[in-house]
Picture 1: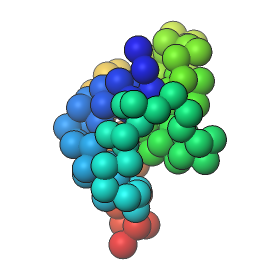
Picture 2: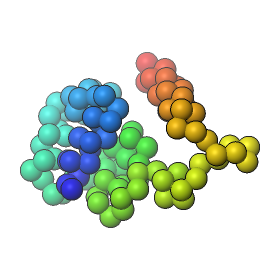
Picture 3: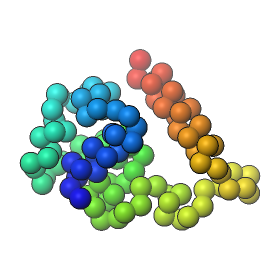
Picture 4: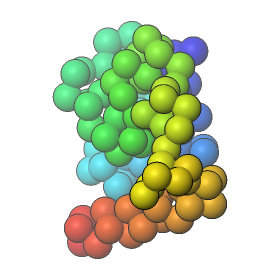
Length: 104
């Protein structure tokens, strides 16, 4: 899977178009689509995208298949109890709202 494919998959998972991701990150229009034909995205661009999607640069580059520490370690817990999928989604929505308010 290419860097572009991983970015597209992550955007789709969030229900966002690549144009929306570009807009939210302040990137030029179609810069992500152009990655489809380029094997050399910049380090800075990869770091911005990894932070945005909450994954590692290694995941974007295809060096690892797990997208998060919870997946890598198999468990994500709070106060000694495993976190449910619903709680993870809730936490993601809180963080997304926080990021959105910071970007205004």
